[in-house]
Length: 198
Image (cartoon, rainbow, N blue to C red; front, top):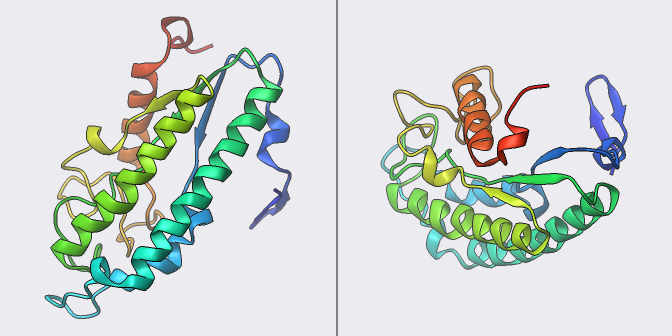
């Protein structure tokens, strides 16, 4: 679908996929799962408070529904890409890195238990879906979450922003160090003939 950006409306990204493409990298966020709204249930407005989103039926049901919707959307996206570039290598970039094993203020204002729940029950399951759908379409899944441990939004050497960004980068996105690390992780799993810059 078209994207509304600050500089105007951009055409759907699928239109940029050429039949002769060698490599296509895809990173699919969780907006289709309403992640932005769901995550608010986990925020603890006061340090030390436990919002217990992990036991909130609305949050848990919302996560389950959102993940089902994401699987269908990802499958459709990869079908469309593969249809336009049948011979391309496709690398699907996993999610994760924002959450470690604890909350912190102001970046990830949630209890340690809720942070662990988000990391495992949402991000972890989302990556399982990404990997499964990637395999279905002959794509390469790039594991991010398990390769960037120690660089979450609460880390001293952070590569990712959390709920509340503490830099110029957007929340739930990687910063410059994170972008560089992800590029290395992607390059590491590519076929040898695609690792050389052209």
